[in-house]
Length: 253
Image (cartoon, rainbow, N blue to C red):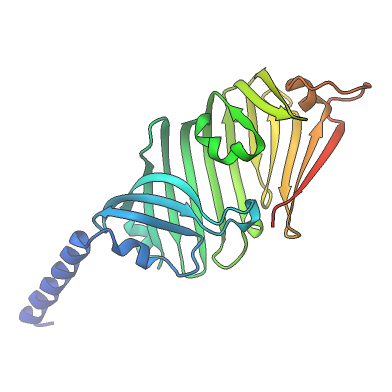
């Protein structure tokens, strides 16, 4: 290549790089696929680094809510993802009480959102309010990930990771009465599929609850004897802590 052509190519690349670095953040939402489950609103700043509100929009499987805000975030473009043909954003949550970081990788067919860090359990109040549940304490997220094709309903996605709860005060309503309990630390294991199980944080990691959401539109909870004991709910009879005493179902969609 002649030296003149080489300088011209370098100049063009520098101009393109400058345009990318200085491009406005409002371009980021338009780079997401039209059917992406993860969306971004209120983008501010630059394409390379900016802030906005992250949403999960493919949520017909978790109630009548069709748009779930995941919080105010700051992002930075991940160049290594671009080399794989993906839009990659490295994320940091901005709301008080949240010390969370994450990665969002969006390809033409699939997306994957991974989150690590700590947050106040009070941030779950919007999610738990319909069930009259209020949690105290803090949550620690260990590689919590949601991955699925864009066009698939949320219940067909894959959840992985673990969430540790520090324990604390719990308020809930049952049979029209409010109850309060002081609960020791617990851990939630996510998966396989769109499911989660709740465990005592003991040497045996005793499973006390399992939750699943199926493609038939139903969410199912199985509660064990130990779960009842922990939350101060009396149940007649005796048996093993892992005995399933109650199965609850709710049609979500």
